[in-house]
Length: 196
Image 1 (spheres, rainbow, N blue to C red):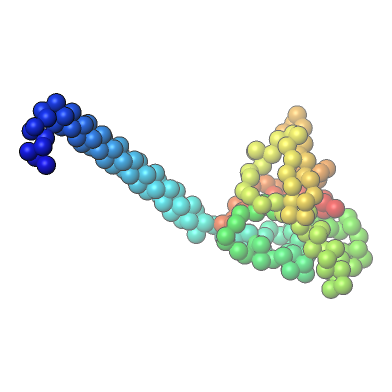
Image 2: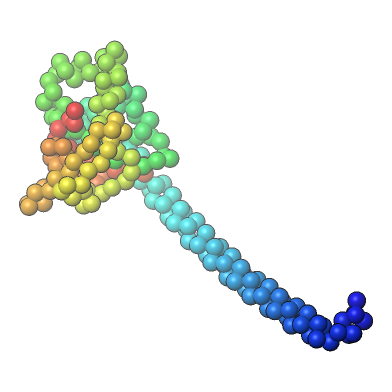
């Protein structure tokens, strides 16, 4: 083969030039790929750092279940969540949820008999849907909830947020009583009305 190349010097020169171009191209690809790997590795390290930061934040915060237990004016919503078999949402740590938690006074506005009726085992489906009216998947602080913004609850109820000039906010007509109570698996916003 080597002898054949020498017999046709022009062909041999062209092959040498082609081999040199292939080598240069291969070297360029290796360099670019190497940078790509470095870039991917760097991006992966950044993502892992972010996950570690988020995990550390989650470990420092109590679950939504523990957060609700600390609030004295929302005990009825805990009972409702438990009766509706939805309290797992407050304890799990795989997703983040926003809970619009009505105050005990908000439930009292429904009437004592109506609340007692909702808590009966035969009304679990109704209670389940009512509770889901107050849960949105995600983690959104109240400052982002501006007038005209809307969200869909776990029961597919549309929540519409309104903002007044004085800075007060409402969701479906319910006033925010206390906002941005952080938990490891979400945020609680306490409201003064049950969303039906």
